[in-house]
Image (cartoon, rainbow, N blue to C red; front, side, top):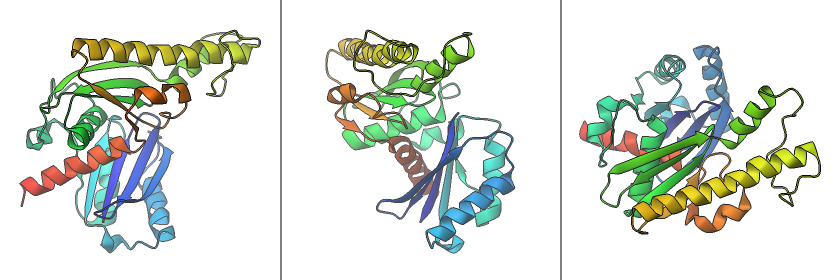
Length: 258
């Protein structure tokens, strides 16, 4: 069995994989001030509740876009399981079957998304990741990351509006019935939720046009299903796609050391 860890700006996601499928996926806030001991206690409890002994975990893989948390999580995994995790980063990218532009700039999560999409579809594909940031990672059918677009995520946009205005509240991420807001909450939902629907559709159309129409799109991320009207633009909605990509990275690295 494997433990796969994906640390994002909002959550740290832990996945338990048993060589054929995901058995459990656990999510906890990515708190920079938390100690390794705190995360270790949480992971021990999850494994205990799942009746999984520590000795059953043969591989751990860590991906992080939060540099301040990376050493903490690396140390926790090494201490808990008795061996160092595979850590996703530029040093191991040459072992992967995809070509990565600007490897020291691109986020580990975007590399994982690209690898998972390339492995799954083997054709031009845009991965739209609905997370803290809204990212569009395009990978070609021959395995090259050809470009990325980044915008604030849905929750980030709502919180930014709440934090930077005197009278606008933080509102739930729900699709309003109309673009004509009849209350403050409704107005914010109309502007952001419906506005993001247009953003995603427009940017996907632009990307596909630049690839001469030969491209599919897949959605991932914790908020990937929150705008139902976008479902028809995606061939798949796979919330765990990033985690799957991190697992595949670990698989390629492990195979290269055999």
